[in-house]
Length: 164
Image (cartoon, rainbow, N blue to C red; front, side, top):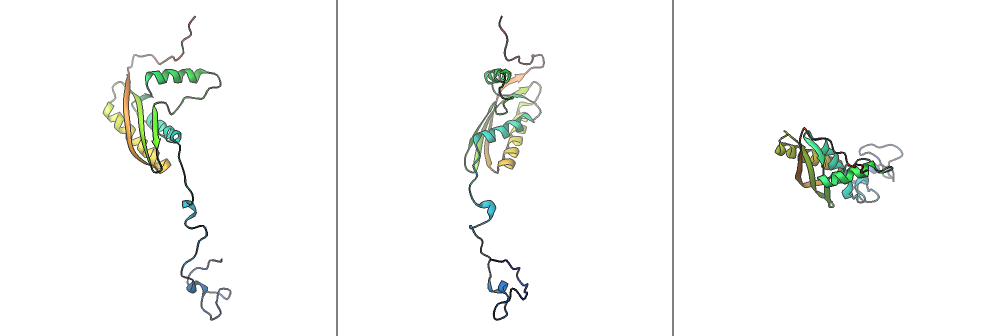
């Protein structure tokens, strides 16, 4: 089928009685039914949403780390194993993803002196914005558990200690 804009006529698109083909055909039929971008289904894995949320949460001022002390310790062990993966951005993040909605649970460590309520609000806003923009899913809730406060005099975690 050749598409001819309405109102334009040429010698090639005239019918037998001289009327334009574009006026005889009021609608253009598309093959496949619908817009190409709407054909098929897209599914997004929980891990994808967890990575997006983890990155967005870490970008907020006042967030020192993600996850509980135990998960951070195991993560430090994993990070030091040769050939292991790099720091896990999903540590402290759990997502439940449906077809059109997502719900998230985050566990964070807040820096001492920061407003916990303010940091939680900023994390929630940043995570919701990032996940909805990148996935098109509606984020119905972001639950935040503050598992610790990082004090200024505390040393950074060493992870694995060598026992001699």
